[in-house]
Length: 161
Image (cartoon, rainbow, N blue to C red):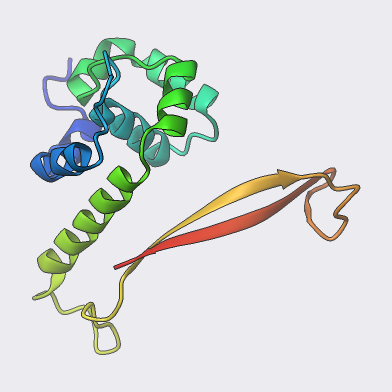
């Protein structure tokens, strides 16, 4: 039987939790929250991202599968799909944007003395990229062929440093 830490918790323990809490406090992310904290939401969504989950249903089902290990992963409250959806819709997105910028800054500081090659300079602008697939009607937009009978476009967003 494994007696070590779960890989997910090993990754998440390197996060600057005090910086995250400063972002939550700044944007009042815990205002009128009873159980599902901003940290629980962040960890749930980080789990979804790292395990390539495609939807909230997929995310919640995967978290249910590791129900007994959630506490060891740092997730204190098991999210229902409605709870996670509501938190994503209502909580201020700037909490997570500002925390992402903190992480980018930390990565730059960690790598500033590492030789990455002659053509790479981290002192230049660093971007965190994300892309989301948006489903659209193929009969209305025939140019947006995504699969055989499905239309979609990709929306790319970035966070400048």
